[in-house]
Image (cartoon, rainbow, N blue to C red):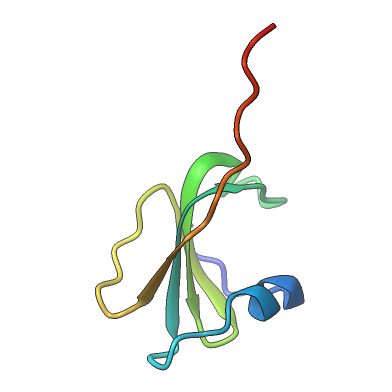
Length: 78
């Protein structure tokens, strides 16, 4: 899925963009208000400049800087 919305300020402050202008955030929990994208337990976000360019379960972007996102630990069932 592609999303060309401006990068939320919180993300831009936490993850400054790589010198190539492309940043791939990998393996995090994604909560989306876009029903076309939906929520993902584990997914990737590709950022170019100040735009989110793609959100998906596995994104390939060989020229992008990669950073791992950390999902909160799951609690054990009671």
